[in-house]
Image (cartoon, rainbow over all chains, first blue to last red; front, side):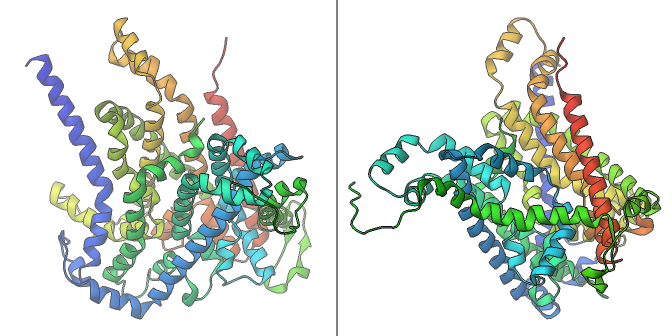
Length: 277
Length: 303
């Protein structure tokens, strides 16, 4: 065999490997959606069903009798939106200050912000519970969206972007025209920061939507559960209703897939921003 | 644009503005960051029955730490965690790095679209995913056993209900979830390597292995450090995947009880907040040491 054709052959094999790997990665999602449309009995067939059926409505009905499902979905949406809005506001304020303004203690304060990145999330699990208990915030949703709203990652993201793309001259000019400092932030810097805020908003929404540990510790009543907690509460009930669980999981996953398809490039860039030297 | 002063406006002194902009961070950090951490450190030295109220707290010195270090369950949880961190973390990099090199060479600038399929598990809900895998791994009706039987005629494996298969199953789910993230990291690093370097090396007669060994690998080193550090930090804190796959209990013979799960159970199932906080701080110290050692290992040894 000539050198060229062995080369094309091995290249073809490599393409197959990469493509096959990608299919393997996506397969669990495919079956999540397939099982969501199957009756519980059909899922237990050997071999299991490989294609969609028409039982989605029935599965949703089971889901809504076992759980306050739509309410749980609503809480997830509410918490994710609240944490997104607050994060964008607080992180843009702090990030803008670190990038554009000069003040005493700027360096130590920034070191403090970055230092909070070193604290592993599970370290705050128990003390967080104690603080919520002391504040009387247990079983409330503000316990989920307020504490992390001025997170170091967001502040860092905004600071980096602002330093690179908001020209200092613009601020000087606005100052000379008599614009207030807060006006400069709100009317000049914020619009310029829009791309960074878009990325940060996406990341915050997704993280909040998926959050499991904080609601697990803070929320008590099924009525106030967010989606991940509600789904998990279906585990190990006497008859595990896999069709219903998969329908719920599919609904919890679908918004993220849509967000990802619309904005994968921006999202990946933001999530890996910490790696940029 | 003219910004005439038409109203008598009250203006904050300019020096205050930065602190005002930082005030949400400072307030939230003090209440929900610094205070809880100090409180947790303090609690690690106390004996406390939560139902008896805060007054029942009693200083016991190092007793919690001594208890934890003599506790067989703690060592078991630590062993499990290390096992899971190694066998889910190492394969992530062993697969992601060559895959990234190949995707970059074959697809160039479009590599990111190919990598997207691998990245999707990273952004989706762990709970939904773990529930999905619980179904896929179920013994009698799970798709994975059905496929193994169809392809190799294998007997059904009791994946989640025997210690020797539970650990690999959890590691596989974790691998599946994070391999794409590392792939994207490596891809990003590869795209910053100038093509001229390879052309020059080719002219000097370098083969593709030497190119990889002497150009690609050194250029990827900072990203490897970053990715491996993240894998260690994440692996040592594994919580959600084993928690869901074992229904919150750690599985048969506690084979998938990680340190984070043990901390959770100590506090919320057994009400031992003192010991739980002591373990948190022990794990933090271990994590800091491991991160430091990784950084040292990757440091260039200059002559």
